[in-house]
Length: 258
Image 1 (cartoon, rainbow, N blue to C red):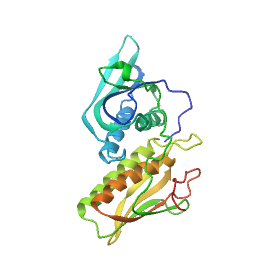
Image 2 (cartoon, helix red, strand yellow):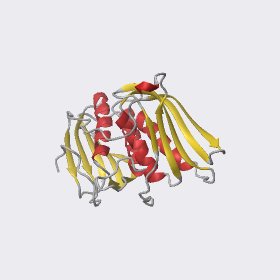
Image 3 (cartoon, one colour):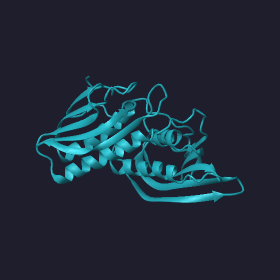
Image 4 (tube, rainbow, N blue to C red):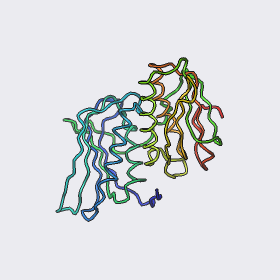
């Protein structure tokens, strides 16, 4: 996927502060002349799949709807997602802005607005990352190899049931799609990238997710470990090994031993 230029994307944000359930409207705008509806829909679909996979600390979406709106008087069209999010913070929605900037070339604007009866409560006017780590501790060991063949390996206390294998594949596929669309940029501003190749049961109690490449910032690993921590409650994990295949510039996850 070609890297986009650094032209600033106008972003309109109106959200309440804090970790709250909220009904949100996300609109990705483009000029009427643009015929690209697939890229915005892919970004919004990735966001929904990530919520389903618990990449946002257990936050979920309900009453989701995607529609297309034409505004000929303004020369614009929009792909619009509306839905009710369970407990989420404004910083959780940064990933949408990152994906639009990296993967929707025709986008000329982004709107993320909470639908709330008291507009005076919508004090958040810009998106920014959470300044604190969102996953401080886990019950399983982690190793991080920046040079090994790219992949994620999970060791379980007992052989995982079929449902656990399917859940792991779902969450890794959702995570990889987010990374591939640029949801977790590096500190130098480059977009995150990943190419997922599939999962396999390598040993009796070990699952492996293979990648052709992984390049991402710290926040990608926090999202991944958050989802795995949720899986751990269902099937205890003893160790997670992450390798990035020596992708230049990939950030090392906070608190993860090399």
